[in-house]
Amino acid sequence: MTIRVLIADDQGMVRTGFSIFLSAQPDIEVVGEAADGAEAVRKSAELRPDVILMDVRMPVMDGLAATREILRSDAVDPAEAPKILVLTTFDLDDYVYEALRAGASGFLLKDASAVQLAEAVRVVARGDALLAPGVTKRLISEFARLGAPRSPNRASLGELTERETEVLSLVAQGLSNGEIAAQLVLSEQTIKTHIGRILAKLGLRDRPQAIVYAFETGLITLR
Image (cartoon, rainbow, N blue to C red; front, side, top):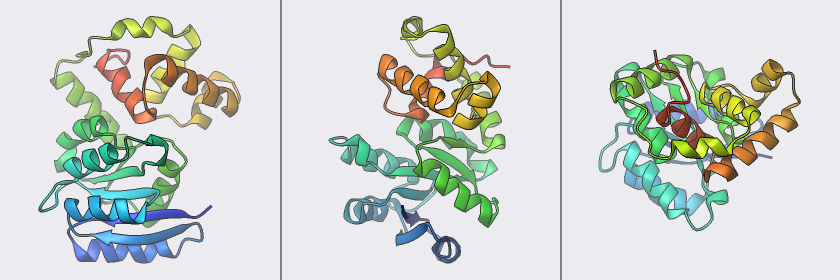
């Protein structure tokens, strides 16, 4: 299946570079570009991409506001909502927490290689969350700074089995299904089943929301 991608960045050279490389991939098609958040919202509705590469700082409407608007407009059928891959730099990591809450599926540092970019698109397209290692560490620091846990519904964790709680903890640490399966010595299909049950029991939409939930309830120990 071809992954349809929309690139939203206010720098023309960045859009062109990403577009040239991604268009050369046999399984990826760049269906459009946007120079600001408002244009990204419009083109998302028009083009129905599978994945949106979303810069944080853009004119008219920033990437966080655009992410919220795009996912809100798809609320009627969340299954059809695009996966949003936020492009960030170290000096923008304060936005990572809010981007996760807005519904972003992953984060990629702007200095990532072309190969990492293509793989990131594939990861979020198949429903996995993507957090670059450096971003994960800073995300944890941000939760610590904000005084997590903050969520009032920690009691919902009691609905999970011991194994489901263990899986949720590993998901929140950014591990893929394959990595979790290897660590727990289970099949990937079993891990997918566990994650599906976790989302259903906690009333969460997707994997990124599960990550936010795990941090906010204090399931992940902050150091």
